[in-house]
Length: 205
Length: 205
Image (cartoon, rainbow over all chains, first blue to last red; front, side, top):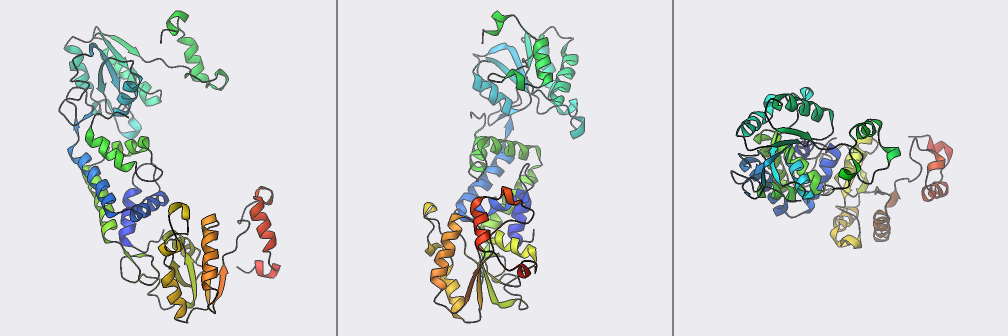
């Protein structure tokens, strides 16, 4: 694309580096900003730099937090025997939205993915082990996605933690609520047959 | 969505105000920035504010430009008898990319759209008229999209400019190159039959 303005080109170049945004979308976003008051762009820029420069991680669960310890970790009413291991903040938000989990979280900060250069040493596994060593945790729940990287990470954590006397569990994988059997992929269907459970348990919710 | 950090929430709020980006995508973008070095976010923010605060419009064609007059308008080798009216910079870029037009441009800065509160007074029509009054222009080409707003704007300009002794033309609308007749919509097909042209002319290009 040939731009008539260097300033525009620079803005488009930077926006287009964001994931999922091509140069054409970037141009559309830049032209949108141009139609808004200048204060709009100023607010956007300030919010981004403030966020990037001043964000903290909770010292307990490694989730994003403004305070040294996040709201969940500083809530003494939660169940300290349950620890739920998740990939990132989005998973904490998703699980919190269900209202079904009352324990604490541990945010790994990624998944083992050799292709992307992410190894076990890049995750918060040391901190996970010291939490378990402290002795209050009875069950560690692996709540990762159902991808290859997540399976690898689950297996690595299983090996790493099986020497401790804690129960290790993983969230159930199977047919999503509302999904039709005939359109379910074979791997999911096979897994949901193999991990079937007594009917009385399945209606508990 | 319940965020564990105000800084994150503010960033997501601002990003989600951009067109076509929902809160979920905004969160993904914010978390992406977090995985990049701080300088990355700084560069993005600077490029956006620099662009928004310092951008100029060419005094001649009203296209975006860093200089008071854009590269196209300051090129004396172009044909001053031809003026191509377009909606915005993207259309200038698209037409320039074809390499088929050697005249000058006039950027309207929008289309007449009462639904969006855009009337003729919001477009650069006064400047268009004074260009035509200057007397060097022989043909004005309306090169707008094939939408309702574009048709309205075309018709308005036609009424406004028909008192001047310039040729008024509009870019051809019809079946796109590579398109199959049976899948062409009725309106386009009807129009392309009604505006058919002698075969010798159609193979010129």
